[in-house]
Length: 198
Image (cartoon, rainbow, N blue to C red; front, side):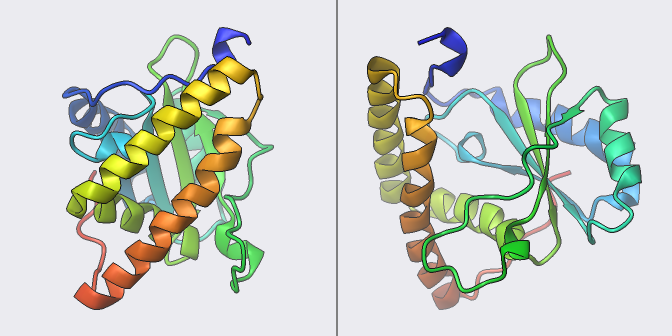
């Protein structure tokens, strides 16, 4: 398997919050009020959680209508839009419209640390999910460690068996299981997203 298809899970890096702060600050500067929120999401946003060394950023926009200023702002920073990515994974049994999982996706320019920018519309299921998933793992260490162990096992299997997209195909339903517990927790504690990270 070529190295670019390998999945590397690394121990938590103390630099991740600082790296997000620099990226998030630059994105806020480029987008201004076009971004409703800018959040550090994914496993690098959870203290002491091992992860792929990729900073995931969620940019929340009011809607996808009039998207050109958002695209232009991100492209001014060198980010490259991947037009083939237009939706997140649709969980089994989901009762929402597929439009609730729509997104726009950008990658870092060549030579810059790996960064994934997910642009999602405010109050849609996938926008809420990214923040809830992060907050749940921050508050539930046992769940975070179980998620970490599962990712490490999947990465080893993926890398050794040359299964192509195996890691990602399994990761999505595993995240669905975590989200089910996170939704119960959110209802119990009346969870609401905190302030934007940038």
